[in-house]
Image (cartoon, rainbow over all chains, first blue to last red; front, side, top):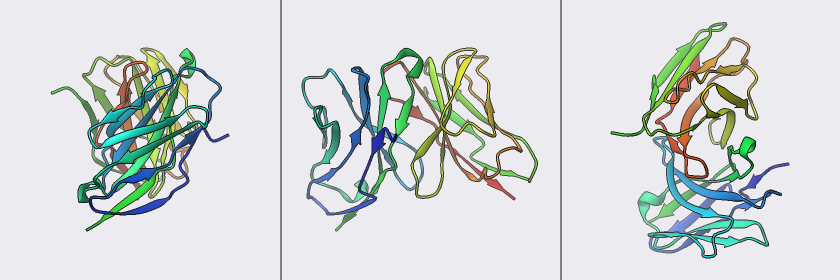
Length: 116
Length: 111
């Protein structure tokens, strides 16, 4: 079964507007971590934000925030005040907490295009 | 500077050849990972290692091999058994339960 699901292959947003990128996950482990990465056209993977399963508050990092809804198993990324440089591929990822299964798995990504 | 170094950036392989992709990190991370990315697609896990001299298969390990003899190094060999090796390969490392840091990637092309 797919562990990380990103249902939006592509998104458009106007510059200076906010955008939400969806991510749902599936795990039976009570301890897990959720990550968002940005991949520009150059190919490198840039870490954006992290949410632990036991964190009480939603994570925020500058213009990035993570809308964590544990009961729904969703971890949506919100980018506020979009900039042209935000145009990139965005990946949601999860690490489960079991010692031997402490691997990082990724969703299929969402391509975000910011329009002027 | 601390980070992850992948080499080479571009690699060309002839049919039937084995090639080895290098990945070195000086971040003192225990865990290291290899991912494959095909055009327009997500990252698929090939192999990962939590500690030296130990590694586990990921989702698409067939046709690949790895070693973890040193904490800093996690080379990936693409063998001739891998039928469609042309892809972008990314190496990453992390502390347990922390974010992963990625290298710049190696673009492998079969000629």
